[in-house]
Length: 494
Ligand code: GLU
Image (cartoon, rainbow, N blue to C red; front, side, top):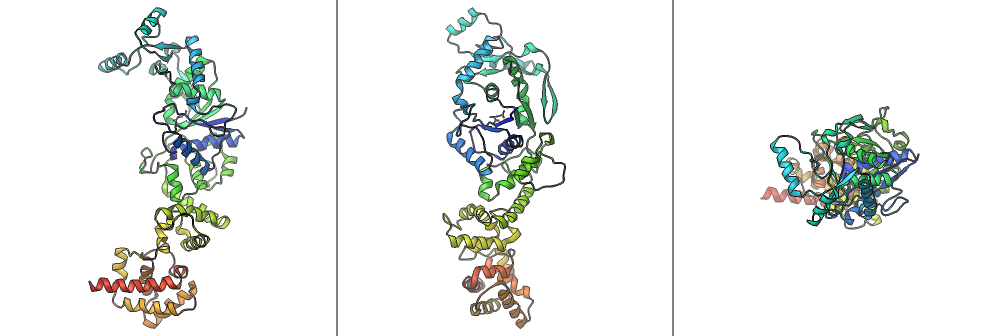
C-alpha cells in the first residue's frame, strides 16, 4: 500500500506555527514511507478564503522545504485540489447518501431550529436536532418545496445506536456514545458542503491512508466515521495530536509564539532548525539527543513514537537550537547565515535593498565578531546595530555610568590620537594600544575598555572590544571617540 498523507489548509490567513507543525508530521510520515504528501485547499468558506493566502501558505511551505507531490499548483492524479473545484463530487456523494437513505433533506427553517434550541435550554438538556424531517413523506416534502423552503441535507446518525470506536494511532481506542451526536448537516441549503462531509469525500477520493491532525478534530471523527460507513468506504488511519501550549501552559497564543511562519523567517530563524524543533514537540525518540537533520528525522520517524501530551512551545529552546544550526552553517555555507540576517537589517533600516558584495563581506565579518551571541538573524541588530550606523546612540545608563567619570575625556582623546597614529588596526594592535595607555596612566585596562566600548557602540555589553575596533576600522574608531568627547563636553556643559 502506498502511504498517502495530506495537509488541508483553509486559505483564510497565513500559515501559523500550529499548522506548519501538523503539516510537518504528515510530510514526515509520507517521506519516511516513500509515500506521497498532498496539499488540499479547503476553501469552501469563500468569504474568508483568498488566493493570496493560498499563495502565501505555499510559499511558506517551500521556505520550510516541505514539498508536495500533489496540490492545486502542481496537479496530480486525484485533482482538482481545491474544494471549490470539487463541487460535482460532493453532489454525487450527497445523492448517493440520499439514495441509500443514509441522509435526508431537512426543511426546518433557522427559526424552527432556534425554537428547538431554546426549548432544550429551558429544559436544561443538551441540544440535539429533533429529527423532525427524518420521516417526511414525498407529499410533505413537496408541500415544503411549494412554500419555497430550500432544504439542507443531514446525515442520519442515531439509527446505528451503537458506540462509535475510533482507533487513534496516538490515543489508542477512543469510544463515542452516539447519544451525544445528532443528525448533522452535510450540505447547506445553498448547496455548499460542510467540513465534515467534504473532508470525508476528499480523503476517500484522494486515497489518503493516514491523517495526522489537531485534537480539535477528534470530536469530528465519529461523525466522519458514520459517513464512511454509510458510503461503504474504509476510513484512513488517524492520529490526533494535542494542542501546543505556550510556556504559560495555556493554548499557544500570539504572545507565546503562535505567530505566522513568515514572522520566524523575517526574524532570522532557519527552516531546518524550526523543523528539528517541530519534530521534538511531539516525537520522542528513544535516544537522548536534540539535534536531528531533516534526513535523519525522515530515517527515524515512527508514528508510534508520537506522544499525546501537550507539547510546550519553548522559545528559548528554539532560539538555542537555531544558534546551534547557525554555527554549523557558518562553516558549511556562511552565505546563508548572511542571508538570514538581511531581513532584520532591512527592517531596522540598516540596509537598503540587496547588499553589495562589499556589504555582504562586511556583514560576514560582523557575524564572526558577534560569535555565539548571534543565535537568530535578528540578533545582528540587537547586538551589532552600531556596526551599521554612522552615529552612535548611547544608552542612557551606559553613558551615565562610563562617560561621566572625571578624566575620561583625556583618556578617550589620548586613545583617539594613538589609533589615528597606528599603521593598521587589528585586534592585537588595538589591544596593545589600550593596554599601553592604561599602564602609562596607572589605570586598569578595564577603566579604558568600558568607556571605550560605550563610546564606540553606545552599549555596555557586546562583542570583544578589540575585535570590534578592528572591524570598525581606524576611521570609524577615531571619529566615534571624537564624537564621544564632544558628547561629554556637551552634556557636562549643559
Ligand atoms: N481544513 C481543516 C482545518 O484546517 C482540515 C482538518 C483536517 O485535517 O481534517 O482544520
